[in-house]
Image 1: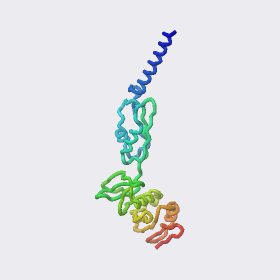
Image 2 (image 1 turned 180 degrees about the vertical axis):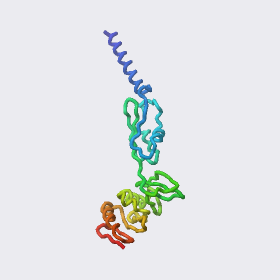
Image 3 (image 1 turned 180 degrees about the horizontal axis):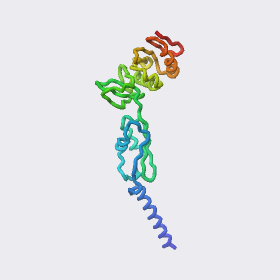
Image 4 (image 1 turned 120 degrees about the vertical axis):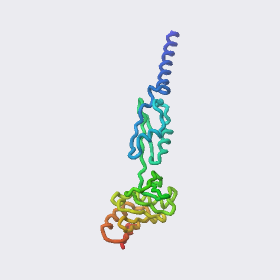
Length: 220
């Protein structure tokens, strides 16, 4: 009886040992593919390279947090979620930063998102993005962040007609339209009301519009 018990224990230990080896050390359950999801402008090959996971590395021992941090090193990516899909796929789901304005920097065009993060440097600014003009552009500048968040919350039909966005303070945001007209927007409060009112006002002929107080708007 003791011999039988010992044999069963030995066989059990062997099975467990084999399973541990297969899962944690063997390439049998290694990374055979990396599935990239959510990328629109960043090539999947670049994300996979940045992830830095060798082929056939045991899927169970991949440090998901480290992979996430490496992927977030791509400045166009705002967030990343890394997971395992057994038996051999590593999944990486990303959300890209959406540029909302252009900041002129040293003869280049810096594309920035609503948080003030530079997503890309270009020689020529894309025509679809408004130019941001502030005293001290940067993610730590209240006027910069206020202006960018205002732009990011605008409907596309308004964004398309804005040429420049100016902000002296967080409460003093204004626009210059592509046809030369100007708009005093004010702060970031009541953005939907201001956008709706401005869309209607732009159908009326004027040189300047003030929607900083949506309850009392003016045109000149």
